[in-house]
Image 1 (tube, helix red, strand yellow):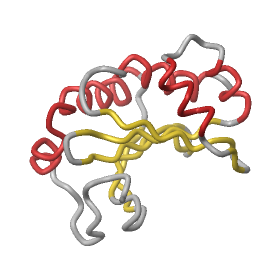
Image 2: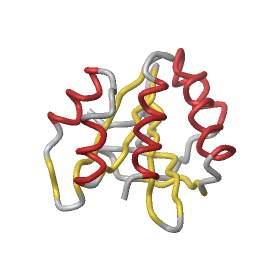
Image 3: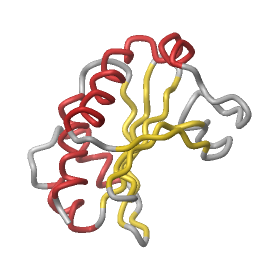
Length: 139
């Protein structure tokens, strides 16, 4: 099962296709995009990560990846890569128990942890924004 819905390398998703695909998560898709572009002023671009992941809209600051968002059927998957300091901060920052469990269950790699959070409606938006802030503000 891929992280995202759009797995054809030759067909970058259009705005209309994304809106049709993400379903109830359409509002959270727009809220996250607005926060990343207008509040944090991050640069964005589409990247294809292979058939196991699909197309993602990724956001960068100073050339470093902050977050990638994979549009999926009736939802989105948000990927945030946290280093060990960011992981430690996230675990004591009062995040929802579901997010804490995802962080704890994610295997550590050289860079830290690649956190994937599936969202299918507006619940969890504040947790995602907190994780993004941790990714940006904690070094």
